[in-house]
Length: 244
Ligand SMILES: Nc1ncnc2c1ncn2[C@@H]1O[C@H](COP(=O)(O)OP(=O)(O)OP(=O)(O)O)[C@@H](O)[C@H]1O
Ligand SMILES: [Mg+2]
Image 1 (cartoon, helix red, strand yellow):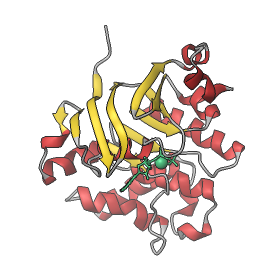
Image 2: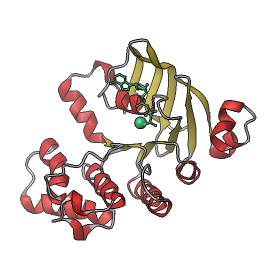
Image 3: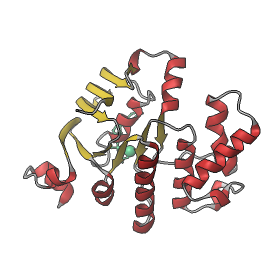
């Protein structure tokens, strides 16, 4: 039985002035899969992912998320979708002036009402333990390493138990060993919570280990789509450029 698409992107266009970033981009994310979007710097990967969570409005095209037409949603409906679609920012976007605990409580307070303090405490510790950082709950982000901050950001994304997680460059700026730990953690989370994910990266090691399928964003379109091995066997110069 073919898998159901949890995100469908059809005919997406987005320009900034004369800069045509997305030009008829099409892609489906299937339930339970890890889909890597690969593209060189400035190709529009972050623009694409921001369109998917409604942070950037495309000029044209359709985006369906969990059966809902994203572009026709009002503020409240968009907010509800965002609870189901976790987003890990390229920059982590942790609040530097807040403790780890307060950073993790933030999405809970924003999105869920009627939680008692013991329930909140449990959810925070559960999310932190999932990324192996329970002991940092009272620390400040500045006291943590880059890899730890990435894990905390991931814990904050997980706390709302999203069905879909979008990762924007989860390993950029991390050393190879820490990168590997983050990728493994992403795989564990995918298994444990049966999430579906889009992973944006140009880290080929990440692609190889984390992807069920790979989409290549080239010249504003989904230029090539397939498994790592399928794309690695391609003789197309633009595809080869990522492997050679
Ligand atoms: N808000 C914006 N206003 C104007 N131009 C933008 C805006 N956001 C992105 N762009 C432009 O869109 C293009 C794609 O940017 P984007 O950030 O999506 O690239 P990227 O593929 O994520 O690159 P990187 O790998 O470096 O993160 C760039 O040319 C960028 O200058
Ligand atoms: Mg980017």
